[in-house]
Amino acid sequence: MNAKAVIKKYTMVIALVVVFALFAFLTKGRLLYPQNMSNLLLQNAYVLVLACGMLCCILTGGNIDLSVGSTVCLVGALAAKLLQVTDLHAIVVILACLAVGACIGVWQGFWIGHIHIPPFICTLAGMFLWRGLGRVILASKTIAVNNKSFLNIFASYIQIPGLDDAKKWSALIVGIAVAAFLVISVFTGRASKARKGYAVDPLGPALAKNVIIAVLVILYCNKLANYKGIPVMALWVLAVVFIYAFITNKTAFGRYFYAVGGNEKATKLSGINTKKVYFVAYLSMSFLAALSGLLMAARIGSVNGDTGSSFEMDAIGSCFIGGASAYGGSGTVAGICIGAIFLGVINQGMSIIGLDNNWQYIVKGSVLLIAVVFDVVSNHKTGKAG
Amino acid sequence: MDKEPQLEYDVQKRAKASTAATFRAVVALYFLYLARQIIRGAMDGSSSMSPVLAWIAGLGFIAAALAFGFYTWKRWRAEVEAARLTPAETDDDTETP
Image 1: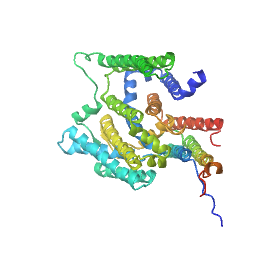
Image 2: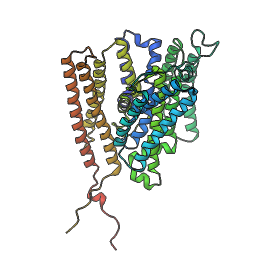
Image 3: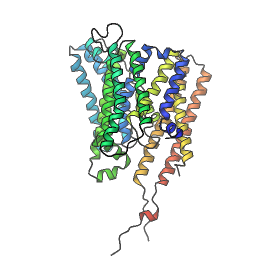
Image 4: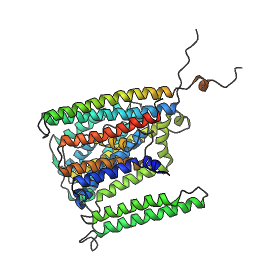
């Protein structure tokens, strides 16, 4: 693979590295402080979770869900209210809130999948409906979330007695284990392919890629080890990302999302229940929005009527920048993760610098504008419009 | 009177074009959202940015939204046109009994 092909394939990764280096320079290295590296994940956990769900909606044919921010508000409000006025255990509250998210998904999935209401219209209505209900629950107030059990489930850190008393060695051990797995998987994957008679790619590039990722994982986990250790929220995010990566890559149902987005009629004629595919896409999106609501409530420690504002835009922006649709209609969980981390680094860097809100909007818009220009120029060069 | 031939499209290409167009349209709307936030921040005093600069930036994003929206529409039309099947591709191969 020549240099040009490598650059084309890893454009977003290179852009992420450049942006990271730029903000590390602009913040005089403060971006690399352990606390900021830990916060980078925590502040963008909701984007990663939402972007996974949004990917499934987008894959069904460019459809989006505009109601996710409002669902975050409603579920966050419900959780805060239940924890405040009832004696229910945190786990019961969490299950109830996730059930509410699933009900919202059933409602929207039914109208979209079975009645064929355009997703834009249905989720636009949901955007007003769910936020309105959230504000009714909150009675236009801000409710604090103080329940220790609830906060431990989402906003605490892994703490192993004896191991994590000073430096959080568990974080470093996990990092080293993951790094070792990444390197070993290159060899085991190649051996498995060779045994089955498949053509095997050259060892160098695959090993180099995994070694680089392994080193970054160790460095990041070392940062976490020097702060408070692995945040529990990271485990939630990784669980969602891995589950959705598995579903979209390794399961037949996951491939149905791509099939419906490519050619719905042919997919239906081949015997796949396309209504069910749409239904599941919106059900899972609302469920993940509910989970994001719980993560946000625990992270911020309070919920108000504006919680979740513009979250859908952040998720869609991550998908666009990560290449979910604009560059050929296909998308991967890895791509949107890179898009989400990209926006997250920019947000974090600007916060550390202390940039005014308006300047932050200008920077975000400029980044999106660059992605747009890239999209237009690449189309012009390949002449795809003709 | 002969019937007008039905327009037929490569379904996959047309779906792809519509998918990409929807996405681009949302991005254009996001530019409008950013413009609104910037201008509102300057008007209500919640931002320290000078109102003139905020208006320039806001109008810039509005212009970007309109330009990208127009580009999205043109590109969608071109891609849908490109997805149209030629008469040779739509000819029925079966023999007339």
